[in-house]
Length: 283
Ligand code: PRT
Ligand code: ZN
Image (tube, rainbow, N blue to C red):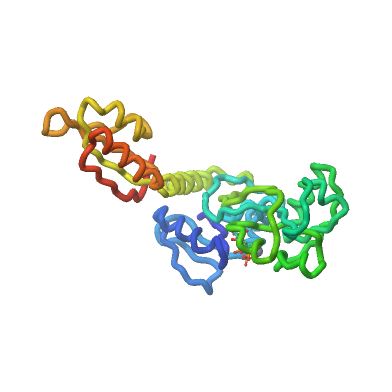
């Protein structure tokens, strides 16, 4: 039985459970329970605050965890980063009041910066030989400059709305982050077998996200051009139609490119373009 630590509530909770669900793992969801077993896979979920996940996985109380890469970097406990999961995307950046002129990273020499991520920030400044006073605070970092606590902040940025609301401007991106699957270093072979199955299911789910399945009928003399518009993952599926001189192409395309590709296919004489949702892409 593998134990996987997930955030009990917060930004990553829902998406982590959704990933497990889409990977075919049924967890009984009861937020008051600390531990829940899956009914159809040898895994149980341990719900924790995200801050505690790296340590819990590092010391083997949980075999796996899903947590922001920023927390893994900040806590610096030894864990194996097994997979980037692509949700919970954000960046950690330095920001200063918007009316102050920024002169590059040396701006922070001798200044004070407020953050909840002192470890990552210390590494950044040390790597550049900048001596800056880091003021660690637990929350509402963004108000620090306006109350005179710091000259700038180092915090998570997603849309940038919070910075704007507080009269701040982003001046340096220090790292990108997304949710990652982490594992206890040196798991035994028995557990690793299950971990590998889980990771390959996650890969299938993640690959199918944002993808559509497209079927299109193309005159045979335009097939080469059509295949340039919708290149296939391996070799394309090409089926002759009953109507001689025509073939059907099946391919997987990014959702964001569907309209643009459909327009181009029509321009070369393609007809009957069908776009389908893709639930899983199991390779
Ligand atoms: O209770 P617990 O300790 O478990 O949760 P938490 O409150 O510490 O973390 P939570 O749930 O807020 O975030 C969990 C993880 O989500 C973070 O560690 C990041 O990896 C990731 N993540 C992604 C974010 C954001 N986007 C995000 N926008 N975490 C926080 N924010 C906050 C940020 O702190 C800032 O206040 O949102 C604000 C900025 O957002 P924008 O969109 O205005 O730029
Ligand atoms: Zn937290």
